[in-house]
Length: 341
Image (cartoon, rainbow, N blue to C red; front, top):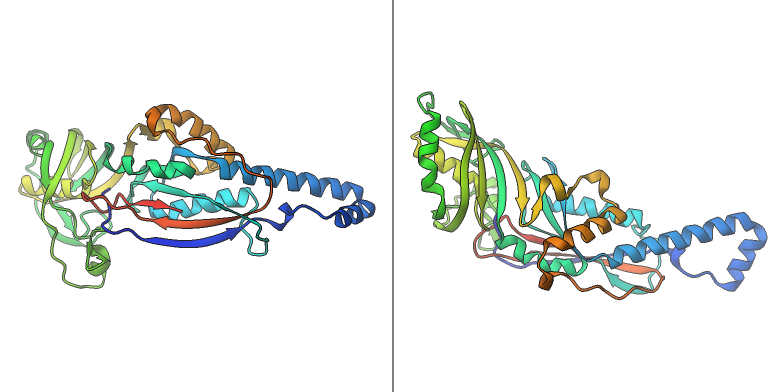
């Protein structure tokens, strides 16, 4: 939910299936003589895998997936990559090298592991469009819990303080929301990807090292409303810009009410033009064909000048797929890192 401060690049390689290597005349003849039916089946499988590999490498654009609770955004991206490579028959170290092609895939805006919702993904030339996802608007539904403060500002952390909340009314909460709307100043959480001396604050905190809070910085809240209040729980609908922390918002609301609060549940319902209900692909639809269809559908949501150009069709031979993780940083935040692999 906010961007990192330094750029890092790590590369690895995955190699395409030796089954994609064209057969020699001698090998083909020997195979056909031994078992014509087997030769035809093997040939058909080879063509099918080659077609899938070429289709995967030709994918280019931006789409959205549904991130569940549990995995980090980076872990989810790895899972997506592995599913696509497995479908194309590419993830084996025994496969041979011939023509190098780069499969680039990344996300444009991290969600905490405890959060769920829209995760925007760029593939091919679409990874170059992800920077706009960081600064664009995002929408969240957050359930806060009054009366408890935690070190992480959400339910995954240790309780650090408890205060009464029984006298807080719905009108009290609605009455203070205007203070958190518009262009405001916000102090980011200590448990975040913001860095000190090249290391994440969250990593330093987990080691038990003393960490000073980062200074307040300008952020934007476009809309903020109370959807439900059933003490001690309250539900907020928030639309905000890049670099904004929902955890800090909920904590600050608790303090403003002379109590304390933490985030119990968090769902990103929209990022840029992508919505959870209409555009986010569930994991059972993480296939080459489904993503190709989603790219075609989602291309109409983006400005024409931002749409990635079509790449030239690839020759049907085997590929080495190199994977890169690139973190692009935004001055405003820490969790909205773009991951490209």
